[in-house]
Length: 90
Image (tube, rainbow, N blue to C red; front, side):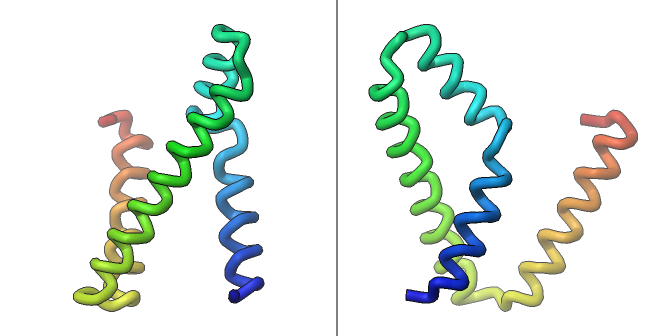
């Protein structure tokens, strides 16, 4: 196992998920239901499956598109979305 990649991935996703809408939704479900372990297990499974699908799609896409092209497309998409948000078009 590549521990550097593991730590980088874990750290990046952990920080990115703090305080986002997923965490807030989990907090609300747990508070409303008073069943935190059920919410924890269900949300954990959902996040694992979403991550699994993301990795599968990325693996399939990377077979046909180079990493350099993907970086440029992703960068362009972020700039366009940022511009649309800044211009209040979204």
